[in-house]
Length: 325
Image (cartoon, rainbow, N blue to C red):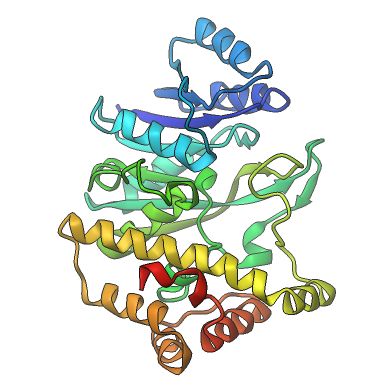
């Protein structure tokens, strides 16, 4: 029988935490283990977690009692803590404030059993966007942003397809190479979902389930607050006038890619396309744009594609990544 491991990182999540954990407990698939790492919450989060762990022996808690904190650091530390331990067939990442659809786990495992073929596999699904009162703001993120249609190597240059809460990794992918070292200076900008997506695009297969299997909550305190899913003419204009900040945001993504590719090489993954991606990022300008076009880099929303190419052509991001060039 298949078994899966769910990894959740928490911090001051008392308001929505019970709904998320309840949605896991109520899954139609029951052979799971949930490990939660709390990052030093000072609300009732730990109290809630301890209550659930007493009621359900599939749930366990790790508390961060160090002085090192951060959302990405918390997740990476959790990943490293389980990497050398018990092995599972499938692995899920979980936010503290979402709601999982009742058949999320079962449907993803059913899909995997048909498609994975014993190679590293990442499967992700469509999702709804809800507000702090559970009202649906966006019925399908795929219909708005086209997350189910990845063009070429777009993910290495500009994210927006893989959301950690919506993905499942098979054991072959999760255990393919050692996780990132949590002691690198950039760990707090290194998203785990982005990392595993890039790894799988190089060494395995990525699949999309065109069904909303998760209700992803957007509220004042979470990481995606302020993310522009829909781009109105006004938002496009605002982004144009704030193009310097947009370049800085893309620079963080480029840094993630450069560090990730370096890590892959250190673990004997060295493909020719990796050098091309690095060249596009480090060069920018006409040379960078030519590689982007060859790699079929584009987003569903044309304004995002145009803005991205403009930033690369003008090399507006390079002053933020000079130390990596």
